Amino acid sequence: MNTSAQRALIPLGIFLALAALLFYGLHLDPRKIPSPLVDKPAPEFSLPDLKDPNRILTRDILLGQVSLVNVWASWCPSCRQEHAELMRLARDYGVRVIGFNWKDTRPAALQMLQSYGDPYTVTLFDPNNISGIHWGVYGAPETFVVDAEGIIRHKRVGPIDAQVWAEEIQPIVAQYQQGQGQ
Amino acid sequence: MKPLTQRTVLTVLPLVAALLTPPAQSFTLEEFRFDDPARSAEFRDLISELRCVVCQNESLAGSQAGVAQDLRKEVYRLMQEGKSRQEVIDFLVARYGDFVLYEPPLKASTLVLWFGPFLFVGFGAYLLVRTLQRKKAEPEQDLSAAERARLQQLLAKTGDQSD
Image (tube, rainbow over all chains, first blue to last red; front, side, top):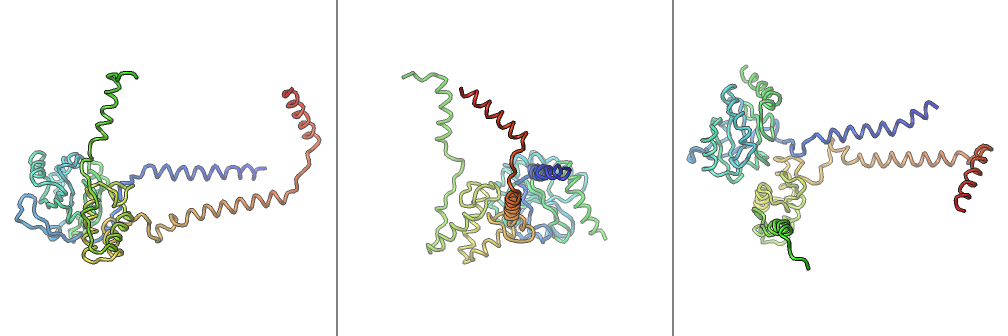
């Protein structure tokens, strides 16, 4: 008697487990694709400086300290949205932010930095997505945390705000900055 | 025939306009030419099996996204360099992950994905067989006297209604 009542609960249990799984799945963002580049050396590149077309920047600029490599474009509304936060990070935390201007035009990009300020130590200019492919970039904004040895430690897809910085990115930056100080 | 009311025109006009507007940018596969028709077929085949990372329900072949065009160009360039199909796939997977493949590779993290459905079907079949066997094992019991009386009562009732 008791066992048959228990047995009747099994389908309910299965249903609830499935419902919980699907409910969890509902909150995953399918646009966030994990990057296979995490914990691998940042790809080589050879790109002009956005502000100085004659200056060629290579992977060497990433070495020596932890950097954020921020992929952005003037046509990207979410990039504008996160711009103020990047300004704050560069100012208040002394984080080195390297710009990766992607699929953009030089005048439009320069115009945006002039209007909203320039949080970047230096900005790579990749209008034709030549190096973007090697970094696995598929949209803007995207932000990579690169350690002092030039190894990618994290990839953020989508804009950074104060919460994302505090909860997701700052702990990783701090972890690798600490290793660097020793 | 009724004359077109202003309202109808106002409703239909935007729809017609929407149909006539060309897409903002339109890419075709025309520019990707190979001397060898077999290579050309291989290219088309390959890009239709790769997923566009931006517009996730489209293949690289069908997508109008800018990034998809960049990747088509890259696949074309690699193939022109003489890279094999597998080398092109490895190139993209190294940068974008397994996500670019429509068919996920068989490895530890995808075992459930590949074999989960068979497990479910197997479990269902097991339950079905077990239930059927149990039914067979139990001899069909005759109705008790009380059930017989209730059956008669029900039959009489339906008989009344049909009159």
